[in-house]
Length: 92
Image (cartoon, one colour):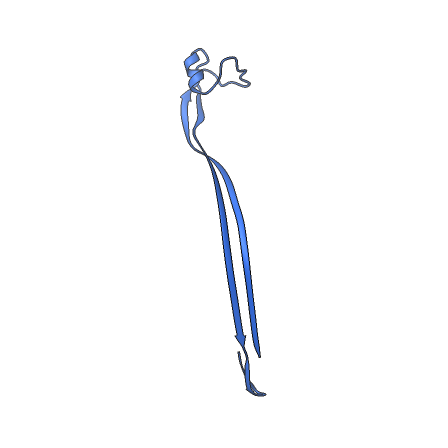
């Protein structure tokens, strides 16, 4: 006997990601307006649970955003042949 099989696929996929790659270390000083601005705090912002003056504060300095899009086509084929020269022997 003979068997033939074939298939075709189209795939569209993608992914999104965000990452923080680096942190900056600063000393918290609520009395120095430049220090607050350097930490990214805008004037008039309410800070809840602020650190004590002199405590170390980490903040992200590099934020990465990415998008990946993939398109793929796949074609597959299979041929199977079976031969039986007698009742006791079969080749596939």
